[in-house]
Image (tube, rainbow, N blue to C red; front, side):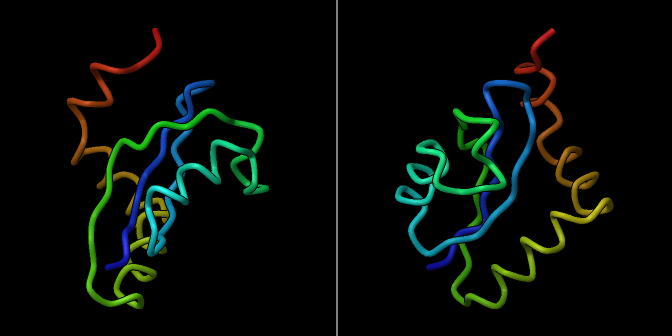
Length: 88
């Protein structure tokens, strides 16, 4: 299985999308600061994931979620969660 996931920074609520074959290890790597693009926003919480049988499908979905349209649709999908967990 390949997982497309969304992390939310505890520092500033920033969202990060990625894909991996090992979700638990990948989350640990992000929180240890081993990823350059997420290092400055640690710690991270896993707020969403999807499972795919094919790696190319997972990669394609991740790329879509990183676009403006994909990010907008994602935020609509988890609207209630984002509203309840915003830092205001």
